[in-house]
Image (cartoon, rainbow, N blue to C red):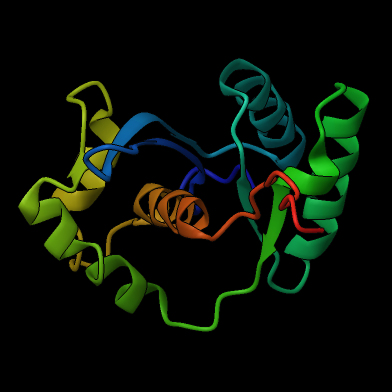
Length: 158
């Protein structure tokens, strides 16, 4: 909510190399900002990167924020109805984050030194410090793993 010692508002952008199945962290943003500033940043980054899917946490009051995000993206001529996915976590954050470790250690997830706050949160993970950027990155990777329907040619026999 923009408080000096509160949680970070966080955005993670990843891309997957289809030939190697390696995930690359393209961008990682985090700041303590009020919801309206966060909304503008999400729209800005969405228009910049044009993602195939957007994971938006929708626990309790956050569901209202996701609805407003869809509206803001529609107003920016982005197909929010098919690309914004409300995420209602069913697993503890710690388990989701720790499940990424084998992929990180094997090089299946690649980072850039440009993402200082994300890397700092990884270094301090488990000490009770913030993990908001890590959580955003995990959600970005998770949404990219979801199966998408493919358009196929109609078989000749139909």
